[in-house]
Length: 285
Length: 331
Figure 1 (cartoon, each protein chain N blue to C red):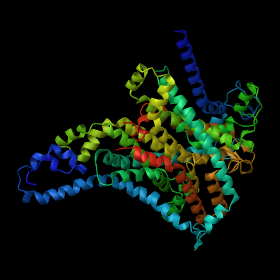
Figure 2 (cartoon, rainbow over the protein chains, first blue to last red):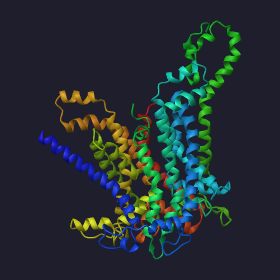
Figure 3 (cartoon, helix red, strand yellow):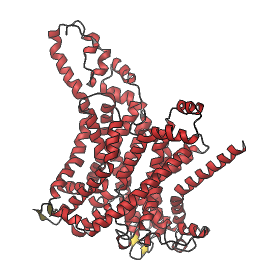
């Protein structure tokens, strides 16, 4: 009895260390956002300081670049943030429509060439993303979509499809086929059965997959860096604006980091229940 | 051929769901059903292909075709922005890369980054997954906490770690001094550049390994353990002979994706260091090399060739997993 108590204690100590380890860097960023510049760069780092909203104020209200940071906080809010949201939302919608059709085909039908085709889809996922920026750059330049939101959306959708299809495939496979067959007998069309019967059942799976599609577009830095010149700037590109000759503008940068992180945290809370299954590519029976 | 049992229907394609409808066809003269049946069958056979068509259209147009075009350009020298006309140069781009000491520097750095990161991510991931594989209080909170680094933009991870490991006022150094260790230079030191990136990579990506392995652990049939316990197996034997074999395909998937994605490490480094490759190129890996050469030389032929070299390296590093998974995954 005593021994098992000790084991439980050790288990929770280890878990606490894990949680603290994973959460400390973002937490420290939140703390930093409430510090004045001079409190940020002191040694030893201060835990007790007078909190200030100056960094936040600069971000939402300052009309021009100031001593706080060389770029404008409001420009990030008016330009970078909406661009990122548009790109991520449209990418998600587009990839979900296209991927759910393909996942349905793979999960429910046996057709000639299914296995090689499925692996071809997964194979495109193996193209190293950083190397893909050059082909994408040349291609988007040739069809005049470089430096446009459309170009970004098309790129992210293509990169999204493999994982989205594999996740949805897994979710659909868990639903008994008889469910849709019942719908077909009752006079549903096949596509009707898909939309009205299957989709509601796998709604959590659709949501989890959407989160991943959204995050791929929301988080991407390399493709945006290469494709965007000045018209279609997205959130991650704003990060570079806090690095200047004279140093890094830590305070405003922390506020930016928190704003950029908000969807991530919301989605982490939301997705934590449904995520796991979809990532295993059907290796679990 | 005279009788139309449902088993005569094609078992491939949409025909599978049709077993509920054969009555409609029963009893009709063969000659009469021939024409409509064929037409219907064409659509039945084609239906799944219609469903996957948009996917293949997009993947072909936006990934495969550009990659093929790049292969063509990798034998040319050109720049569409400055309007420099393409010029055929044969294998000269590739020769240039392999003769470039910076390329070899980035190869060594990449290896130094990839191997320890994957080993650490695997060991830590397995350990944490085993810890989490039970009923816990605060279970949802713990799982959410683990998801946060994984879902965060790599650029953002680089940014916050730059603050966290700052040589002069970083919290990490403060912790080191508390336990009596000296302050370290981290990103400002050539010898610690790669270890710093490893730290960030492991922090950000161990959760991915945890999630996949945890899914595997939770699906192990418990009877196997009970049978082993009856036979007097020790905890280690059960882990070694039941858990590990069960997890093997999942370990392969986790490591496959981690390998593909660690080769792309770029955003983290861009924001972790002030320069593209860190102090004296000590943090220059494949991704940064590509960026550096592209923006220095602006020859997209050369850049295409670098892309293909990175693709080749990825292929070599992942071929074993891929072959294994192709055999293992059934659907």
